[in-house]
Image 1 (cartoon, rainbow, N blue to C red):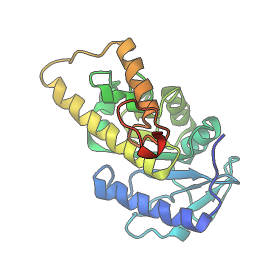
Image 2 (cartoon, rainbow, N blue to C red):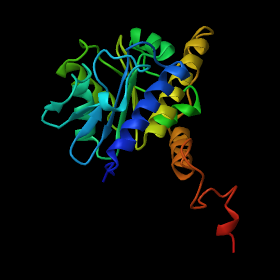
Image 3 (cartoon, rainbow, N blue to C red):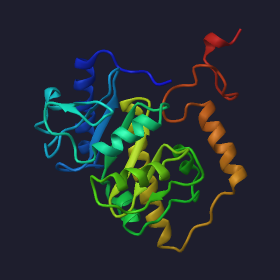
Image 4 (spheres, helix red, strand yellow):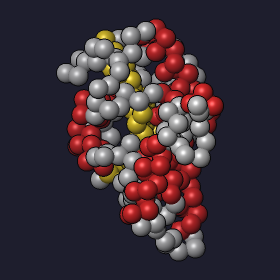
Length: 234
């Protein structure tokens, strides 16, 4: 089950901070991109056509899963935010951006293969590219859900990328990793299509990432047999 945020004022501040970090990291620009977080009664989503530099916590839009909202007009992409949160109880945060290299691959409808072990951060052997559909439509949301099946990230054909997380920090980290992975793949392609790691190796990679909470938190349970907190060693 997902954990809903109860301190809405703090959540609003954290969302604005994350939006500005999206721009500062280079994965987003202008009024492109959007962000949502699950709450106890629905979700908060960024408003339409408002630059993050001027956005305040009060500008974030409260939405219910029936599509009704309070406050400013929500992002044009509210449908896929709603549908992903509704269909994925394992995640709390949906981050969408038009990062340059991920979007470059998306413009060619390229799936990112397991050319590098870090492909596993998205939860599988590939980062899929969803079929193209007009922005803001139910068709785009439907395509995104298909591409995100058993995954934490996907590309959107001729559009951008979506990254998911349990936390704002996790979703932002993943979006940056997907952009980095995309850049590596674009550059690798200049030498030809790179070889890919076999599925059995990727299964080991993904399991190792799961055990180590890769990229998200220290190995607090001591499941990594290489390094363990002293407090867990008798």
